[in-house]
Image (cartoon, rainbow, N blue to C red; front, side, top):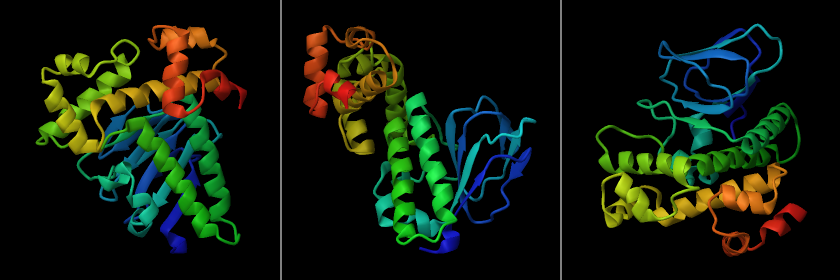
Length: 267
């Protein structure tokens, strides 16, 4: 791996702009940022999120007056993104860094902490002389992309003339908002004014799984987060996430993860 193919810097300066020509940029913004200007358009309320920007995009990040770090910026070369391990992921296959879109992923608190830990490890690794450093760096990058893949679970770059991808994007947004209430594919098809079969066809073509799998994955991810990062009882989590009973919640969770909710909490 080219030593110059990846760079990382903390967001500490009051103003940072795209000085690295030819590099893709990945922002993890924690807090303390007033705005992120992208092609002179200001984006506010950008805390706890990740942005993916193409080299052709002009950007400027404006921080508040605090001296603490507000996150990280990763600079990645084309060669890094073409690594076989990274190129397998949906998030990279469709190039979230496309020049005609500004992909943004909002992170849940649990995922945000993990992303922060991985970026801190990357920061340490990139400046080190450890054996097998390159393999470790690619592995950590892959982990970041896997988390982001899970957060969006969709080929997120939507072009206006691609009706199927636009439909899948709308479906995924609805699932994020309604998964605790609506569990049937037919519910979402009705909200989107399409047939169940057509909705499944579009999702299968776009992300390689059916609609039910997307709903199930969202329910499992949310269940895992609540079990790991809250003090709520299993019964409380069960009903908040729309399961009919604690027994069914345990059955559903074990069916899809191999362990029960109580076993996850014991680990």
